[in-house]
Amino acid sequence: MRLKAICLMFYLGTSFAAQTRTLDVTLDDAIALALDESYRARHLRLDLQDARFGMEVAKRSTRARMHLSLRAPDYIENVQAIRVPNQLPIYNKIGMLQWFGSVSVAKPFVMTDGELTLGSNFRQLRESVFQEQINLPDRSKRFFSTLSVRFRQPLFAPNRLKLNLERARLQLEDRQRVFTSAQLDIIYEITQEFYDFYSAQRLLEIAREALIQKAHSFDLARKKYEAGLIPEVEALQMEVAMSRSQNQLLQAEGRVARNSDRLKLALGLLLDDSLTVRPDMNLKIFEIDEGSAISHGLRHSTSLRQREIGRRLAEISLRETRADGTLRGEFSASYERTGFTNALPENTSTSDLMDASWQDLRRRPRNLGMNFTLTVPLWDSGLNRARVSSAKTKLDQRSLDLEDERQKVVLQIRGVIARLREARDRLEVLKKSEDVALRSYEIDRSRFENGDISAQDLTRTWDDLTHSRQAYLDAYIQYQLAVADLKRQTFYDFEEDRSLVDDRNGPLWAESSDDY
Image (cartoon, rainbow, N blue to C red; front, side, top):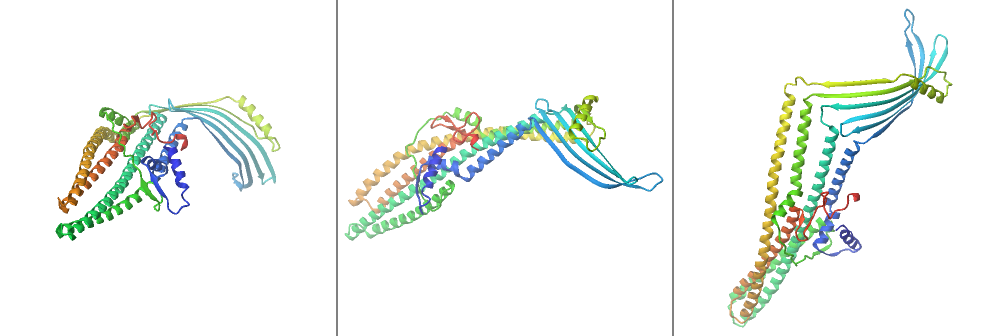
């Protein structure tokens, strides 16, 4: 369908130079244009893309990450007052210039919600002081280095990493299902607009044909009246019938113009374009297994899955709320090696400073740390209990919503199947009725020409034919809309006997995820 939309847009694009284009589209063409170019379709694709990015963020938050921090240079120089007991203060000028850097690698563990961090810090420090008493400066350089390993593990608490990952997956699934359902809604709405326009076109044709027939009958009645074969009242009745047909024709023309603009707007076409539609009048009658339709609809229903997702999110919220009022703990441990140099002359090279710091790091004993924290809530005036009760109530509401939605989905599928079968049966009956009405009109027209019936009888017969044609048209459109509605309710195409969604819950007519 994407290829068809591109080809159709190319065809339309080649006509932009013309002031007015004449377009003749099928239902498939209209659907392809709407799914590819309409505002709503593009907005849906961006919404789905945003959900995919959100899922990617959640995934990457569970992977290792590395940070580099640099502060170079960090320079300060000022005068400081040094208090000396029983003497006036001494004002020495203090200067400091340092380069500082740190590198850390953190790896979260999804299974335990813990985190392991490897870190390294280094700092080179230059210090100077101008001593007021001796009027001489003093300068030195130092180097500090640190290697560390730290581990943190929450205890007796929900696994936040897992829960956040599950939330992201549920939100992505929700957006994917909304995307599929919304595209089916677009297909149904375009189908409705398409057949509304076709209905207006067909009613216009019927109105034109009616006017031609009424004008012919009026002309014949006028000649008969002038010949003295019928009374004047019959000629006047035919003139009134012709005027009524003229009024119906004007209404039909206005309806065509309005429906044409609505369809153009839905398809993203120019309002100055001339548009006609070409429906497939060859109906494909098919049987529907109601049990299979309901089963497939329940399995892929967007609204039902949204209720399930809402209930699961309520369960997660309840679990987290309960955990806030229970025993919590955290274990942390660290291993660190440090090395630094004593104050060395300013002209000492950086490499010598680093070597001295490294040697000191290897020589100096390791630093170890371990910490276990336990938090026991003793009294909160019933605050957490109230929060848990509120979360339980929301969970119960989500469960009720789920059960109610399941019944609604079944009811909607049954209803659309009943409407489709009703429209199909009406088509068979109304097609025969239209043929009979046409034959009756042809017979009565001959009888009127022979003077066997009045003009009023002929008008009544023509009106019966018009009503039969309109009733068949209505049944045809209702059948096509019921077929489209059945697709969006069950996510299954019974005409082609195929599912409209794949295992990843995406629409079979949509682009791949890489195209977004």
